[in-house]
Image (cartoon, rainbow, N blue to C red; front, top):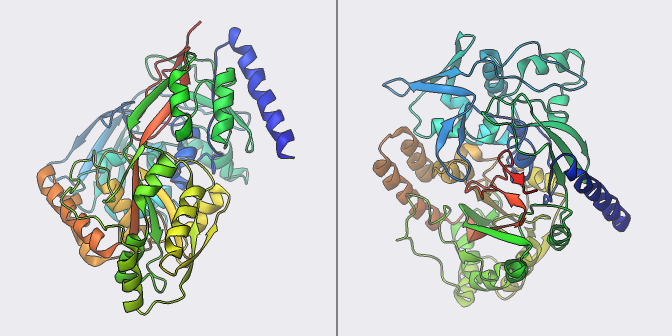
Length: 523
């Protein structure tokens, strides 16, 4: 069955590649399937690539290849002196896409912006990002000044607010489309048949196989996309992705196997782009469950895991051991923090003193490759071997990617989960606040860790405007994190992106997204 599916998918890709002489078609061999196409509902980069980076725009956006915030659907904005309100002036005549279900009757206006955020402020909204960042508590109200002007009123100053609005959850959706689908009794179409203002129109999705997009000829940017069609050929196996890249069946692939890096470098038909990743990979305990509610036990598990061996075996020289929950390239990184040594004898003794014997636990391993973890199954097996040396029996478990993300966020999740993060806005709060705050419990905070001394530091840091003052608080927060050890911090990785030689102007984005609107193919 799997072999027949592979042949079918390969045929689809080859068919698209064959049409490139008539119309340029860029094929991206993506590593997994999107959970859906409404980016406000999810946190996965795989989903954002298929939605917010193709179909949608935000009020402000990150310039591709940098963390610089530039105008997006808002041509300008102004902050009040007290930092409690931000007023955005929208671009005129920005057109939404259409499909066979809906044709817009008007361009983008303030109603769309207000709807985009107010739907996320409704109690019970299941948007992990919005909730984990405490955006519902931050935004007091959103005011329509006029059709092309929107004002956000905040409950407190928030230093990263503008950068946060450039993130994927803040992608602007059409209120008119949402109303039409609600009236038709099919509100789920927002998540299945997305309509935005972005560079590509969504065409169709064959589940777990292929996503098709067409260039938006009415795109508001100065230049419409350089290719006529964009195809995501979903290819979970990195070896198969590379075979397709070498065969010319796709033009860009993410997350090559570390063992293939040298051969890719030597292939004259390929170009290997690389960049130090703004990321961290970690193992998160469920700190609400015994015995992982005890920091001593968590510290012992840290000391039982040989992370240098993980770097050698899993990353094969393409990563470095992580000691903090933010990457070393980020401002406020506290290099003075002392890491836990690899010391299984001390770990065994600490577990015994904590009264922990005959411990059995699950370690969750992701089913897909991520920039911060090229092989989660192998990593989990190495952790399993290490923990067996200190008397801990580990079972490695996994689930389909969407289910993995959903189940791993549950409050009563068992064991410890392998996950990671690539920064979304270049601000430390995007790691420390989203992944480790009390607001994130039950969502992006997979450790379910709510520790008041830590939370007070990061909440205060968000209210300050001076970066040096903020950095001092974040440095203190990293010390608290290390003492409490809600994670085993494992690795920061280098991101590699192989492309075919005919691909022009593809830029590796530090925030992890794969962005294609300026990419073209040489004749």
